[in-house]
Image 1 (spheres, rainbow, N blue to C red):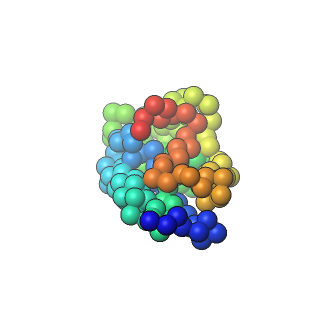
Image 2: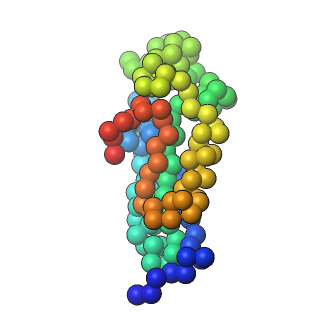
Image 3: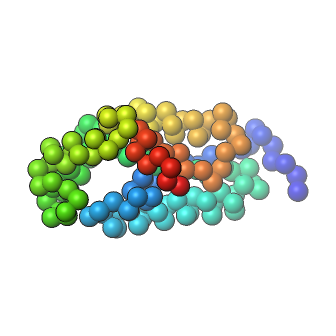
Length: 141
């Protein structure tokens, strides 16, 4: 089989989530759908590699501040789950305390990670899930 022309190599980056690897409480549908994206990424990467197409995923977690961060904390607080406080601010504090870097990630950090996966700097990377979570899921794969 002939090696694809490097000037015609394409890249796809799917958006998954750390929830796919951790199984976040009160988010079964979201966690399941993001796990499906990870499986789709690996299968697609294997199918498309011979055609010069790389397929990877990005799995962010705890990105903010912003509407999505605030809304998720509100929903977790209302969920009745024993894993979350009933006050959204306490939910947020609890989540951040579980991050080794002790802060939220930024949208810009996610964008830069996606840009890396799309760039020639990752030209030998496919079927990979790049986790952007401040170390929260360290060791999970």
